[in-house]
Image 1 (tube, rainbow, N blue to C red):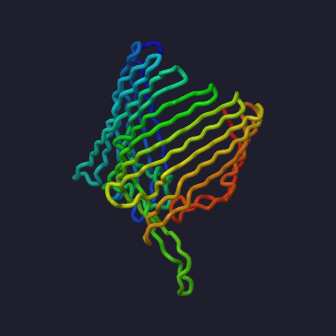
Image 2: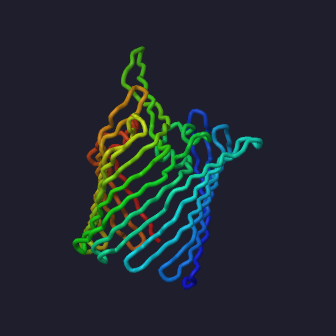
Image 3: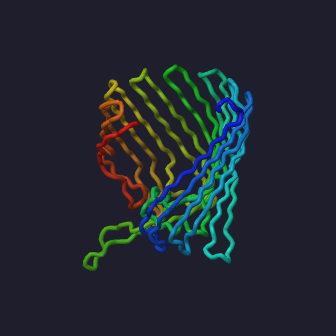
Length: 362
């Protein structure tokens, strides 16, 4: 009953992901995840309280010395307040990861990491001027699927081994203002700070091809995961513009100030990035778009010294045609400038490519 002051939800799901040979030690694995979510929320007038709970159980049928079942529990008790001008959510994430022992005589490794989950918004002038702030954090569990989506050529035994610390963000906070000078234009200006612990960067293993006893061009034959801690300050802005139901423009940009705990360089992280997307709805059936991403140069760590990667310029266009209410045909042309840049050193992005398909909506 939606009129009841106490609302609750319970759901669970199962995913299976098969990974081939994933490192120098770990053989092919079938990773199975069971995720369960439970929410309970009490609300009376402006005030509310409750808790969000997430349980994740990850299993590997072929257990090895370097990988074993792991379990995660997140409990977030919270208080919230909502009225015409103020919205507040004040919660704390209580994250616990349990790495199951490989042998029954050993004790399981229990790791506990708290972090905030606080959001605040003050509508000072209705829809014209808003002040907002938030402070969040998280403790990664780390799954094979996540690591492969990040870099499928990495030696994953470095990343998911049972004895390695997992990435942890104690706090990622920002404060900003939203301004709507016109009804069709929204501006967002913000700044923030984050403390990032045990964050991954890639170490590229390089070699030279040997052809008839002579060394030829250099190539990358694999990546190892390395970890480091960072302080990150950020200044950013975004805009959203729309004209009736014809034109929609979204753009955002950020400048980052990175600081390392030691004199070690900052790897795999640009100092700035920009995203821009323009959608044009020609009529009820035809629409086109331009989706573009830019990022500054990055420093790569390799076995033959540090390397500087080219800035990222990725320009993409596309269009779609609505055949009827349920069927949409689309065409995407990606990296149409055929820009050459590396995601990681020796791991190039795709050159110019296209995708043609049909979407069935129901």
